[in-house]
Amino acid sequence: MKKKFKLQDLDCANCAAKMEEAIKKLPGVHDASVSFMMQKMTIDADDEKFDEIMKQVVSVCAKVEPDCQILM
Image 1 (cartoon, rainbow, N blue to C red):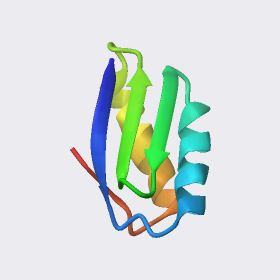
Image 2: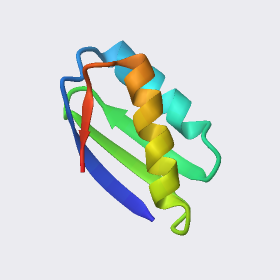
Image 3: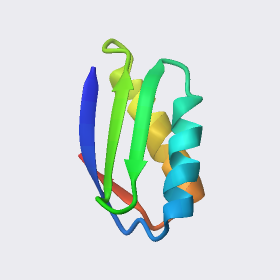
Image 4: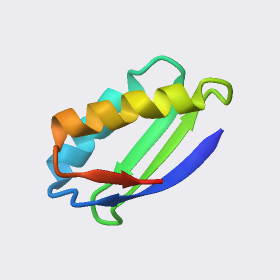
């Protein structure tokens, strides 16, 4: 399943790159992209585990950029 999310308060391109790299390492994630310029994130992950994977994605993003919110 591939889903797109809007991001709010993502402050730098370096943080976006760190988020993308960390999300790609999560089990069940096939691909991920985080765009600082567009303030968007795309996640491609296993359908049956998508909700659980998104909880991990939120946690990863909070560690890299505490002010950033993922709008679902």
